[in-house]
Each structure stands twice: as C-alpha cells, then as structure tokens.
Length: 84
Image 1 (cartoon, rainbow, N blue to C red):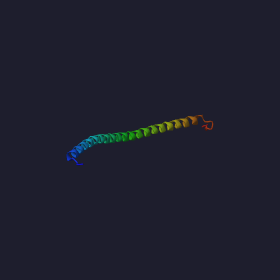
Image 2 (image 1 turned 30 degrees about the vertical axis):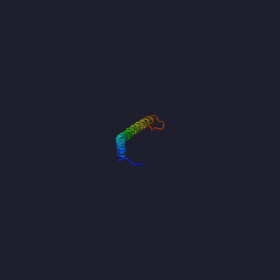
Image 3 (image 1 turned 90 degrees about the vertical axis):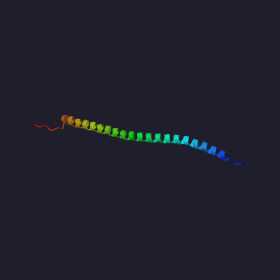
Image 4 (image 1 turned 135 degrees about the vertical axis):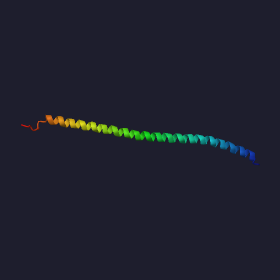
C-alpha cells in the first residue's frame, strides 16, 4: 500500500475549498447575529424608556384625580366649618 502524494494534495485542496465555503457562511452568520443582538439591545432600551414615560403619565393622572376628589369632597363635606 503506497501513499500517492498527488492524491493527498487533491484531498487537501478539496478540504480547503470546503472550509473556505463554510468559513464564509460562518462569518455571515456571526455578522447577522451581532447586528440582530445590537438591534434588540437598542429596542430594549427604547422600550424601557417608553414604559417609564407611560408610568409617569399614569402617576400624574392619578395624582390629578386624587387632587380633584379631595377638592370637591371638601366642599361637600358635612363636617366643613362654616365661616359664619
């Protein structure tokens, strides 16, 4: 059993071509994953800002409603002191 150096060289060339093809695919997948991860990170921060703004608006609305109720119920209260 003799080893043919030419055959080993051809096998290595085929392996190199296959690895180059997979290397390009792996690079494309890596770039795609990096871009998507960055995009999702930015979206997560933006979503947090939107939720925080909505919570602040809701708190203001509740405060205004509480102020309105306190003001109007004080006028109707039977325990209110009369000025006379």
